Length: 419
Ligand SMILES: O=C([O-])C(=O)C[C@H](O)[C@@H](O)C(=O)[O-]
Ligand SMILES: [Mg+2]
Image (cartoon, rainbow, N blue to C red):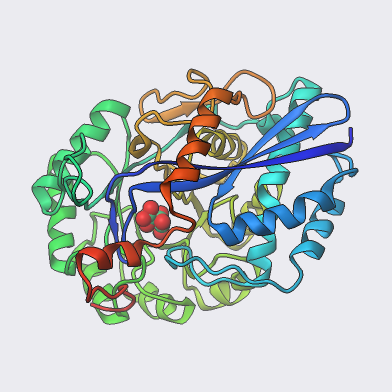
C-alpha cells in the first residue's frame, strides 16, 4: 500500500478567551487536517498545528513521502527528517517548552504517521489501538480542563461559559463541565493570577468536589521558592503539580521539597530531555503528547521508557478537533501505564469539528474507544470546507496569545518564573 497523494487543509474554528501565562486565546484556533491517500484507494486522517511555519514544513515533507509504503514507519521518518533538515520550530506561546530540531521533526512526522496507522487499521479491519499492542481499557478517562477566562472576547458577546476570574467562577465552570461531561478529575490552568488566588481556587474546588483528583498547571509562572511554598500549601490536595517552574534544574530543585509529584509538558518535551530529567529527579509524571513526540508508535516507546525509569504518565492537550481526540484516545487506550486522566480541550470547541458526529462521545468523563477500524472517525467534508473558509477569512496565521493579550493590556509580559 503506497502513498499516492497527501492533502493538507488548514482550518480555523472559534475559541473562547482562555487565559494562560502567555496571554489569552485568540477568537480563532488553527489546525491542519492531513489526508493520506493510497494507491489502493484508502484514506487516512491526521491532525496537527495550524501555524503557518508548521504548515510550510508539512508542505515540504509531504511530497517526500509519496511512493513509500504506509507500513514503512522508519523510512517515512527518515524522509521527514531529511525534509525538515536543521530547522527548529519554536511555538510563539512557549507553553510546550523549548523548540529543538528533534521536536520539530517529531511534530512534522506525527500527523503523517497517525494517518498511515488509520489506513493500516482500515486495511486490516483493526482499530489503531489494536496496532499499538491492543487496548488495555475500553474507554479513556479525560479531566475537566478549567481556565480562567473573560466572559467573552473584547467587543463580542458573552460566551456560554461566562467569566471565571475568581474561585467562585472557577467552581461554577467546573460544575458546568463536570455536569455535562461527567469528568472524574479536574485540572486548573494557572499562571494567570497571583499564586495565593490560585491556591484559593484549588481549595474551593476541593470543597466543591471532595472526591475528585485535582491538578494545577501554571506553565512555569512561578520561581522555585514560590513553587515550594505553593506545593506545601496544597499538601494532600493535589494529584500532581504540573510545571510550576521553568527548566529541568528548576523542577529538580522543587521536586524533593514538595509532597506531591511534579508533572511536565514543558521541561521534558523530546528524547534529549529524558536522561537529565531522570538523573536529576526533576519530574514524577510525564504528560506525553503524540503531536510533538513523533506520533503514536513513538509515544508508546516513550511510555515504555517511563515505565522503566519509574515515571508515571498523563497526556497533554492543545486546542484540537476530533481527529486528534480519536488519535489521543486510541493511544491512551493502548498504553498500560497511562494511569492519569488525559487532558483535552474538547469542551471549549462546543461541537465545532471536522469529523462526522457520533463516533466520539463522553460517557462519565471517558471516551469509549470507537468500534470502527483505524482511528474510528470519518471526515465531514462539508465541515472541513467550512472550517477551511474560516481559516482563509480569519486573518490569523499563527497562535500568538501574547500579542492578542497586548491589545487589551499593552504592558503584558508572558509570565515565566514571574511570581
Ligand atoms: O498543559 C499545558 O501546558 C497546556 O495545555 C498548554 C496549552 O497551550 C494551554 O495552556 C492553553 O490552551 O492555553
Ligand atoms: Mg501543562
